[in-house]
Image 1: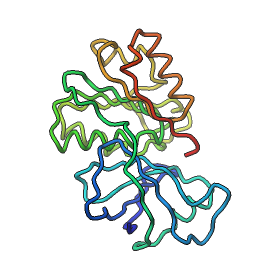
Image 2: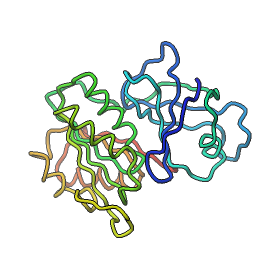
Image 3: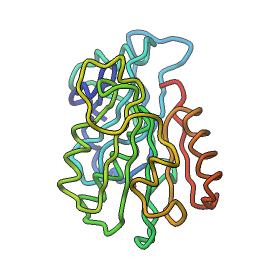
Image 4: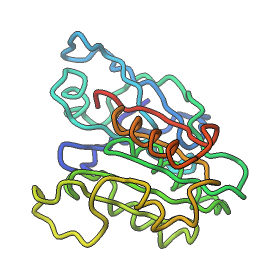
Amino acid sequence: MKFRRREDVAERTAAFHFEKPAGFTFKAGQTLDLTLVNPPETDAEGNIRTFSIASAPSDPDLVVATRLRDTAFKRVLASMAPGTEVEADGPMGSFTLHRNAGKPGVFLAGGIGITPFRSMARAAAAEKLPHALWLFYSNNRPEDAAFLDDLRGLTAASPNFHFVPTMTDMARSARPWKGETGFIDREMLLRYLPALAGPIYYLAGPPGMVTAMRDMLAGAGVDEDDIRAEEFAGY
């Protein structure tokens, strides 16, 4: 699979566009394994990483996104020249949108956990799915929020998609902010959702955030069968 281009989507966060291999199909929300081929450097973490696909199945490129930590894999990825070949294995995973359009979907994302939800939201808009979807997206600052403007644009393209970004540390931001602040909690959800019971909830982000969201939903009486989660550790 050939690398096409890098796109900076937040501070220290980049999206990487690859040519989609012929015949490659996937469901929005799935993952793939990327393997660097003969990289110029490596370290103990190895040359393979699992990424959620951030693009929709109908998009021309395969897109993944990541925080740019100081590891050999991330350094090689960040400096990769267009045309560089990587190996891709997948798709994998069942963190995908439910079929029953009568049940709303509520996405609770933290940080780089936004990637599978960007894929799902773009796919829902492209396919004109009837599902009512809410995306609550928590970051420290707007500067840290990958795909923020992109997701705002989706609300115009899809009347069933509702986007609620929130910032938890605006004291460290240089940007103005008129949206929600503070952590995602029961009170915030109830400002936008008619009720907490009923939707299917999808949780993705750092392990601590995923645990807190699961506990919050369980404490609000949400059925465990209506909660699906994916953790993003070390990204």
